[in-house]
Length: 363
Picture 1 (cartoon, helix red, strand yellow):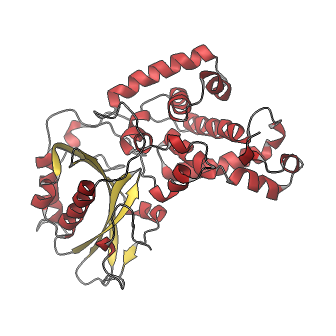
Picture 2: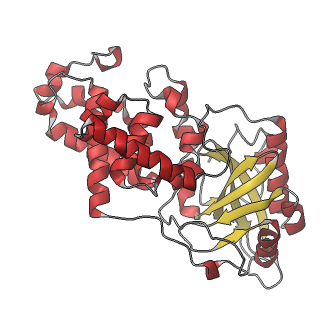
Picture 3: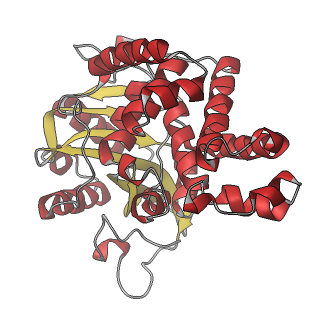
């Protein structure tokens, strides 16, 4: 038995709820990441971890020490996710090409309406705490939104096989035991999953690598994005984008492909015909899915506070913003950000005075 599983298992089996809590809570963070990968939704991953612990408590008698507590919990969590997906079947669906505003040529991205961002603050202990067994697995590419959206195209069991084998690094035998499949079935499912994944991942995302610290160029790019957003300057925003940049807005169906299309949308959103035209914007930096993110707040005429409007998660490639995923403002609560901000910055300077990658504004 692993050192981190050294809580009094006998006490747990006898019904000691305090010992049970001590035993399972140390695995909460990595199980939440596992459920998030399976489901693509942060809110649902929170619920499924609670379901996992409830099932573990009810079935504590099934743990006989033949595996680690961690493996036992992963099996329960995986089954809980598979049961959820059986009850709530969903697959990304082709997006209506006419939903682009304005209409655009080319193939639209698939629609993953349930996709949600994951706060980096909740990833940090997984990546830095030596007690967390999947520390090496929480690399940038395996929690990036592009990866999360891509694996949602896989059938649930293929998805589970790929996560256990390629992300967590479990053996085919261990994965087969977890999923109650034969080793040959796991190998076959993994082969199909890898093939499907290649067709949905962006370029340069086929090889997964550990996270690296943001470069000075990336920090400067984020500062310029925040400045363009706060000044409602579509032209300045466009200069930061790659020519083939893309913007999506889950759960809304709208999408924009290309620098010109995104600039046109920004001009419409910030323009004289928009109800936001006379407002004042304020950006708060944060981090999501190992990517830079910006919470946008607006103070409309006659209002005394800035109100949350959106969370923008950015993907940066080759010194340019290649993708912007815009999420609804209610998700900011998971990032420790408030629904409103006062009209003036707090003492000590504006929130963006610090390093916007690593110093998110406190609530």
